[in-house]
Image (cartoon, rainbow over all chains, first blue to last red; front, side):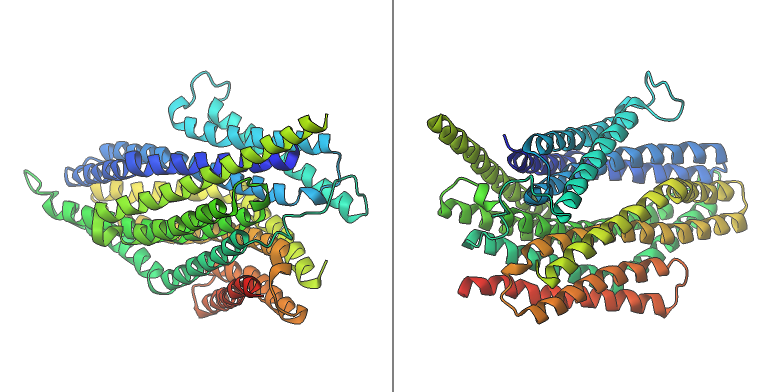
Length: 358
Length: 162
């Protein structure tokens, strides 16, 4: 299989895997984890009320562990998808990498190996911890994650060296990129749709930065101060009443949720826009009828709008909006699987042609 | 290769290298210390309150808020520089598909490149000065990117009619 096809298949598979993982994380982990953080914060407030500084440290250590659990899963989700994007980008620029097909194939395999190893290892960090580690502060999962990152960096440096050779006049590579000339309806829809999605994400981000970001930061600080004051007010009580502190902790949770949905909507709509543009370039490698290509592009764009819009509406409409947002994510996944099948069919077609030629 | 494409691709690669360099510097020399400071100062504010030291508690909370302010912007700048760099490269590959004359495409390319540099620059400057100037720089940069995107999207669609 050529380096370009390997990167297209690998890139699409990484994006699909990252998105499925993200959907599962959102449904089964995210909200439950946020509730546990709220409980730990409430326990810290109770420790303040009972004048127990040692317990405060324990509760914050628990919050740290919960944040690590969430953080590593978000990292795994983001890295799998972003490496998928990078694989698609590398596939697009393959005609300008002035190395033999064999060398480009090796670089592609090295890249994909690292791109799988890093997110899987990051996911395992929370579970493996320091077990059997030769080092006192870094566990095996972190070591393997770093190794995966190194493989990706080496592969990218190799590609850069190939681009440098091309710029200096070497032409070991095959034909120039047909991907950049492909102008069918599906490609154009994905290009203009993707640009509009990025524009919408930028406008939303600018609105959030101007009107909400500073106020969220101030509210965050005020809520924490009020939480502490409400707990301190109970310090001289024989049986502390934590009702006020609980109300503030719940309010603090709402501020975090508002920040989270805004950031999630902003980042998802821009990422989907970028994905749509990248997919526009690989349509010639999707061996499906034009009608099916259009369908998958439309499904992809509809899902790309649904997910961020309904994530934003989650605070007003709760689980219903959350469910619709998840359905939007599912539409994008289905469209990507459709295109992945088309790319696999393309390989089958090329192999069949080779077989017939032999 | 046209001038606008060359500008977008070289600008994108340079910005990606710059963004990654900034991220590497931040990860090696600042991030762990900053995260420790955020977690440590928040825990300290609760611990001080439990020990009856409200003045210490407020000071720790202020340290937490200030450090968090800087951290959010530093991470945002890193991801925005790299994200915008990727956008520049991808647009550089596709720019020939826009049915506009080269001088307009060059203007759009400059708008994208300058906006992609100055918007995150304004954001990171807010960690040094919380006045109006860094916000204005960020706003102008974001405005340039938004205007360019608004012109590029119909440019891609227009090809269909032609």
